[in-house]
Structure formats: C-alpha cells, structure tokens
Image (cartoon, rainbow, N blue to C red; front, side, top):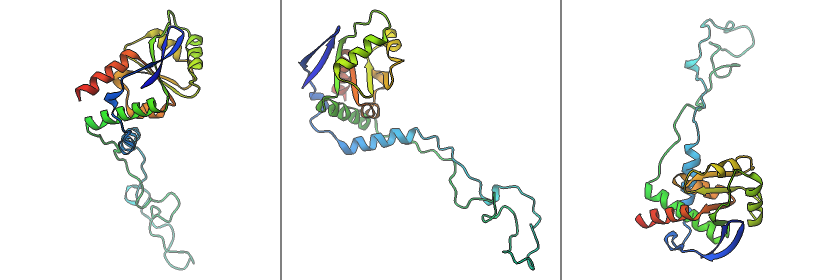
Length: 206
C-alpha cells in the first residue's frame, strides 16, 4: 500500500507491505475495543445514600394527625429534603478485558483503516538534532496533518518529546503502548518505520 514517508525534511511516496494487517476492517471488533478502553477509564465512584445510610434524629418531625400535612415518620424518608435516594447509583467497577488476541486484531484493524484513509505517515528520520517545536510543527503542516496527531515512537526520544509537548493535540506514545483506541481517537498518525516494523513482527507472531 502506498504511504508517505518523511526523511530529514522531505516527504516521498513509497509502497509498504501491509499484508499482516489483513484485508478487512473489523468494525464490530473495533466497537468493542473502544467501548472497553472507554469503560476502563471510568472511576465508578458515584454514590448516593439510601434511607438506611442517613443518620438523622429519630424523633418525628411533627405529629401525625391534625396538621393537614402528609404523614412523615422520619426525616430520612425519600420524599423529604436531603432524604435518602431510592435505588440510587452505587460504587462499582466498570472495567472488563477483551482477550489478548482480540485486542491485537483490533489494533491491526485500526491501523489498516488509517492506511486506507490516507491518515498515516511513516518517519525514517526526524531530523531533530535538538528540541525544536517549530521544526516539528512545520513538518506536520507539510504533511497536511492539521487535526489531532498520534506520534508513535519505537524508542525514547527526548528531542521528540520536548518538541511535541507544546503542540496542541499532539500525543507521543511508545509502540509498546499503542492500541486501537489511541489510533482511532487521533485524526492522523505519525509512526517511525522501526515502530511499524515492531508491529509487523508482533502481527506475524500472533
């Protein structure tokens, strides 16, 4: 598949072997993967107190008869202000996990969708001798990456991290942590050729 490759300030088109990604974007699997990653980010700390968890005085608010009001035995009743909440949310854990092979297949499908939509570019050499945000910004502009960008690096690159940290909507992640959710969330993907080779090796092994 033809893809743009950036090398020291110049972009050129080249063919890349994407056979290991498959030939079909598995939309249903991607939906489950995105739902899993978003669900696992939920804290689940929402909590309301029921009638039994409130500790008000046990004396009646007013006498039961003769006032013209509805009878209320205790202030923690649900119809009272600051009373208990019936069937309210409780603290719970929303997280769940997909099988490892399914997560890998979802990552490959997300990567395949980026290749088909021409929303990915490979980098042979960053050309960053020192941290320079302006250089990285002009590179993204030359590639036509105006929206959010996910930068996938194969190793720790201090110059790259310092150059990208002040750019809005640009995220740098190592290849070991890339997943389908990150790939789909970003508008464009910028990946080193070494990182792409690492994903290809892991795809051939599975």
